[in-house]
Length: 137
View 1 (cartoon, helix red, strand yellow):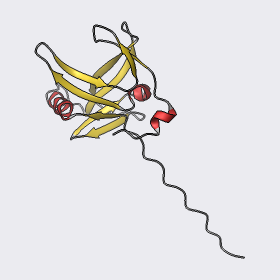
View 2 (tube, helix red, strand yellow; view 1 turned 30 degrees about the vertical axis):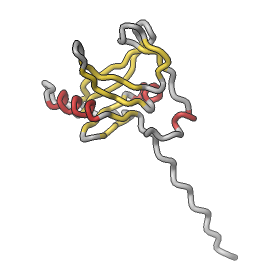
View 3 (cartoon, one colour; view 1 turned 90 degrees about the vertical axis):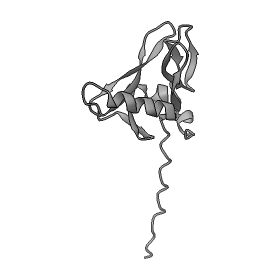
View 4 (tube, one colour; view 1 turned 60 degrees about the vertical axis):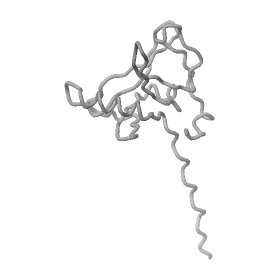
């Protein structure tokens, strides 16, 4: 009887990044976490239903990391993605823009299908399995 070794299992494909941060976004996250009134571990990003286009982005302090939270560590900062938002944020780039009259985080999201005129809400379509197989740049 010959000893037949089973073929080696293929290595799992790399998990796509849910979100990336620009240098400006990372610097701003670093500033607001450092200046928080209570100790926080990261900034939590998510989406919620509401607004004239259907959904809006949410940001809040995270004092702990939940069991199903997606953790993005990039450029020396930590951002936690709410598990319910992962498919809506897959492939998103988070930026921080400063204009003459305003400043704030901007989400360059490939899942966004439209936005309202006021800039407060967006229409998002969840990413599909095909989208998730292509790693983000």
